[in-house]
Image (cartoon, rainbow, N blue to C red; front, side, top):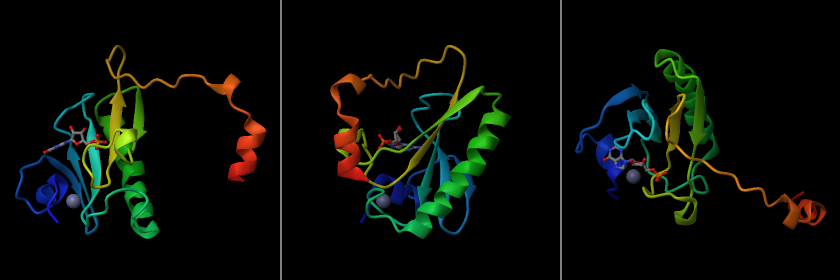
Length: 131
Ligand code: 5GP
Ligand code: ZN
C-alpha cells in the first residue's frame, strides 16, 4: 500500500528527517504549524492507533518523549503540544499513524480550543458507561 508517509519512508518523496531507528522516523512537517513542527511516524503502515500493535506504539511514544524534550530545548520554545489524530472526524488527513510534536511560542497562532460542555454531561452516567 502506498500512502504519502510510506513513500517518504521508502525515500520516494523527499523529507527532512531528524530522527531514525529501525521502527520509527521523525520528519519536519511540511506545514510547520509552529516552528519545529515534527511528525513521528512508524516505518510500518498502520492506519491509526486502533490498528497499531502496543509494542510499536510504546516504542514510538518513547521517541516522542525524547524528541519533545530535545526539540523544545533546542528551539528555545516555552511549551509543547503533542497531538495525534485518529479518524476523519478527529482531523486525520494522512491515514498512516503519526504523532505531531508542536513547540509553542509566545504569540504563535496555533489554536487548540476545548469548549466546556461539563454542565450538559452527567458524569456519573458517563463513568458507568466507561469504567
Ligand atoms: P493529520 O492531519 O493527518 O493529523 O496530519 C497530517 C500532517 O502531515 C499535516 O500536518 C501535513 O502538513 C503533513 N504532511 C502531509 N503531506 C506531507 C508531506 O508530503 N511531507 C511532510 N513533511 N508532511 C506532510
Ligand atoms: Zn503508509
